Amino acid sequence: MFQTILMIVLVVMSISLFVCFVRALIGPTMSDRIVALDTFGINLIGFIGIIMMLQETLAYSEVVLVISVLAFIGSVALSKFIERGVIFDRS
Image 1 (cartoon, rainbow, N blue to C red):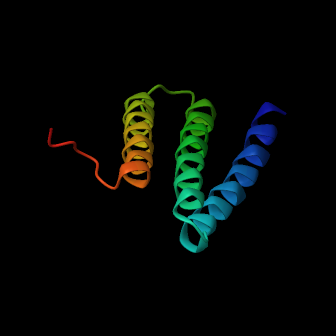
Image 2: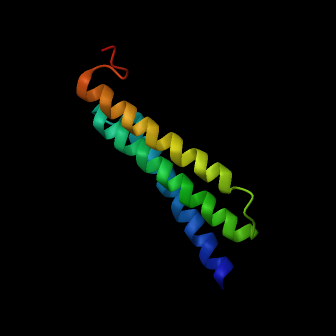
Image 3: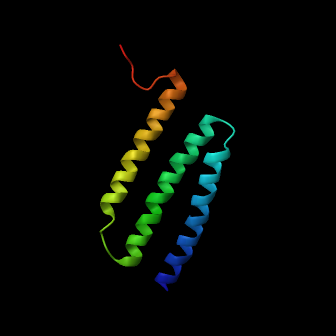
């Protein structure tokens, strides 16, 4: 029963990942694209977590950690770029 629920959740999350990817491609503004990419990263972390539960392993925990750090840094960098126009301050 639990395996069936996890498989259904994987299908729903796959659809969510596809929708976020499409939104990141066709988003009318840069802010929409940033939010879509951040949501894509969060969904990907959940997707990998469910795969870890299905396989009953902790092998992908480092992958989840790396994706979460990269998603956070990417969101902060893109938000700073939209706000100021530069990522690294020279002063």
